Length: 265
Image 1 (cartoon, rainbow, N blue to C red):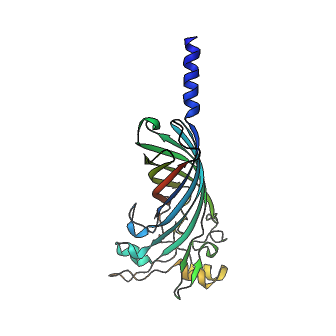
Image 2: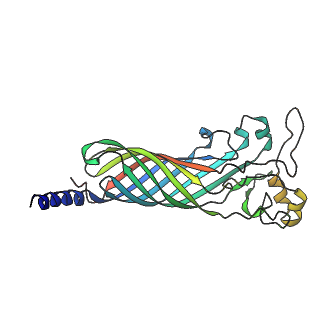
């Protein structure tokens, strides 16, 4: 009889801890890849927003949502003269959908502020572009700037603009009142592509690009300026990016969490 009573008490407590939540995040995004020399650069910060629906089950929270961010990278911000002379840049909007699990590291009902971790799976869509010598916006994916999909470069497949990612990170939540919480979150996106910035491997022949795609492809593929002190300009076969390291991006910001039916206490 005592065991039955204890089981009912535990079951009631667990049921009370289950609830639906909605949250909105405003903050910033940051890119890390072939056009950045540092893991984090304040110059690459761009706006980001996210909306999530969440279901809390005691220590565990399941969340699904969408996010948008701008990402950008530019060689002009690199200190190394060889990177600066490469003279490449990109921008893109990123649309992301994800399903993640949050783990509260302490019992939420006992603390007004506590840390949490999260991880999951996601899918995102992007479309990198840059500005040509006349200041016109040019989408980079159709130009095949590294020979992707061209018969002269059979080992270079055309990359997809829709990719999977792995969101991981953590944050800190504050109980504001029975209806709302605040949180600060830092999230890292592990990517399976090195073409977020349209840069990965080596330069290809400008003649091939001109003949196969057009002169704009050759212009946007190799925008290098002479390296000070040497006057050298990279040619076909020389390194344009670093294929050994995938690109990535970050989401960080302040989140307002609403307990849809009020906090269950």
